[in-house]
Amino acid sequence: MLRFYTSGESHGRGILAFLEGIPAGLNVDIALINAELARRQGGYGRSSRQKLESDEATVLSGIRHGITSGAPITLLVNNKESENWTYVMSTSEVDITDKNVIEQMENKSIKRFRPGHADLPGTIKFRQRDIRDVLERSSARETAARVAAGALCQQVLSNCSIKSTAHVLQIGDIEALQDAAQMSIEEIDIKAKNADLLCIDDTAAEKMKVLINKTWQEGDTLGGVVEIIVEGLPVGLGSYTQWDLKLDGKLAQALMSVQAVKAVEIGDGTNSAKKVGSLVHDAIYPTKHNSPLPFRRQTNYAGGIEGGMTNGERLIVRAYMKPLPTLRSGLSSLSFPEFAEQTAHYERSDVCAVSACAIVCKAMVSIILTGALLDKFGGDNLVDLQNSIDQYKGYCSRLGQDVKA
Image 1: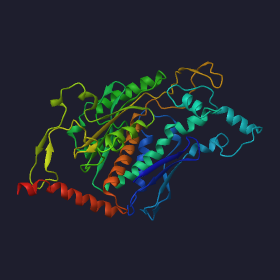
Image 2 (image 1 turned 90 degrees about the vertical axis):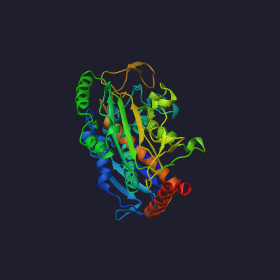
Image 3 (image 1 turned 30 degrees about the vertical axis):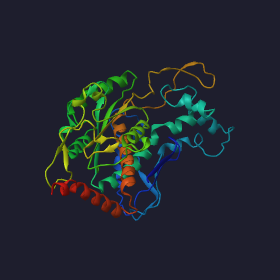
Image 4 (image 1 turned 135 degrees about the vertical axis):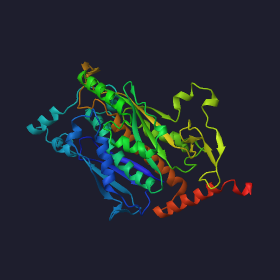
């Protein structure tokens, strides 16, 4: 069983990721983890903080001489800006009579709720006296830990012949018209990595940049849609036997947990609700002898999942990100603790972080799929996991042969 947690605050000393259940024997490429962290920080429309930080993962446990040991893994992503938050984020008591403490605390205090954030419900729920206690943990800075953990899980998946990528489908009302379904996953990945908006449609990407510039000048923000694609998944990851074992449910929960994501779609998703059944379901046909599977599909409306389980087709998941709720133009709000009418607090923010959302969502999908893979195939060592998968694939390829013979 794979267990995954994060810890840390936005302006604390760092963000931590804890992973337990990763098999021993995995040669870990830290450079690949750091490359994903860099991609999370990139993208057109990001805030100045991304220039102040240069995220890198440090391994604190579970990896020895570059190889996983089977022990719990701890990854640390330092917050370089924490040097300027020494008093505000101190874990021990501070001298509230010290003028330096007073000045820093006052400069970084938050006295007005930000609509759309966790500020108001979080402050009330935990009976806080300072909104910053909520902001620091609820901040999207926490996703750095998710990306680090997800990049490690992507290496497990890659060693099991499973490939993944993510790209931007839409920003604001501008949609990419290039159809990823007609491209190989390698083509999509290369195209997305070479685009600063992770959009594989160059014409749409240029229009998106114009819209981002216009929105920034207006002091507003933009959201959009990202798509995660995975190939090479064995049939039968997940289960139909209990509601909380269904893979589509786990993916939806994981993606909805990403800050600012408000909807999740698998396969044809919302479009299927508008059609008749004959235009929604993927008919099954026989396939050639010696094929990896004894069946094939001509369509993939289901997005690779049927009955809460993978069905051997390309997994297609989309996440819908709302415009970020921290606006330079300001929103009507209330002060705290007075609850008097005010304009919302403005904490440095992105105009558009949809490309970063794509990287975070791919990380979360990778974590869920790695967990599903380990749930089905087990293996304390990577070799055991690979052998178990190969044996199962052999079983799948032989299905129906004995009957036909």
